[in-house]
Length: 384
Image 1 (cartoon, rainbow, N blue to C red):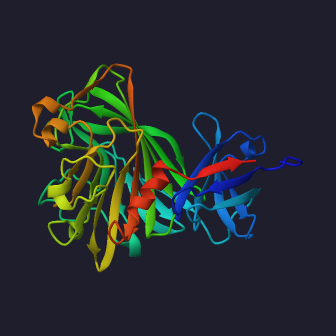
Image 2: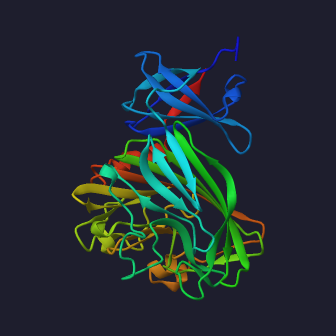
Image 3: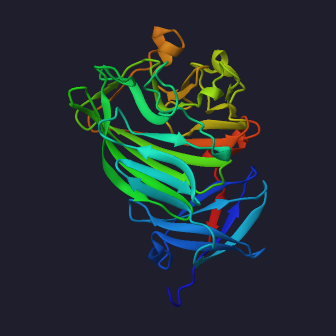
């Protein structure tokens, strides 16, 4: 990088306060392209404060630069210079592999574990930890024998794919079978777990394929973020998604003490509260909150504006389930004329973007509405 000046970045907050906001820009700059998967630092040109940043190679060969934007008020801007190096005392996002699991830590603090064994019904994350290390989802350490054994923490599933059940875990249910990774990398700011999966019948016939590309950001435990870029591909023939409530393309089962049937609360973007006002309703986001071992915690799912049939319908229950479902409109609205089934033709793809936001308190305390705009209306970045 000798004799090559690195670029300067000016970030404009826009109309929203930015706190714990991931920022990512693609760069076409010869000096930056040498920093693939390298730790770099950004220096605030006004204050001299230094923050961790990360360069990494995108799948298309371009270079991305990512960092976390804090304390930038609406209407304000901030300029940074880029240099090589790392921030002392920060280990970033680390992926620790064992047999068919990847444990993810954020600055050495346990956050979650990705479980992808092929004998499972589908890959999933468990546990998922929030403020004070509290579990915000339900899984193996809970008594799951009482109801809905298939609601495994945080996962992707759907109940009618060419008339095959890939939601439940019955004797005739299909499976989402892990095939491999295209990226598996930690970093100072973001960890990437990019996977490929087959959606199969109980007998092992492939119905379709998917890519589940997860990004986990290095944030404090009161504001964890997990992004999913999801692609369904009709790789072996037409794929018919039936109109059923049994599905959550992005699915969460919360910790039992968060259930709205107990002392927890469901909220959606339009102010709906609990199941009667949120189940089968469309909304930009939905949030589930409650108290786990004395700590108020919450978890929200954000539906991006680029997603098919935005905003999604929600399969969300007082007993702890929360999931997005764009195909169940006839069932949710109890009107067969609004049939939401869809056929993805052979060779076609369907793309989704979701964000999971884990926070302290309820949706108001967790600033869920503000954080939603970090996702769909990110701050503008000018490169010079």
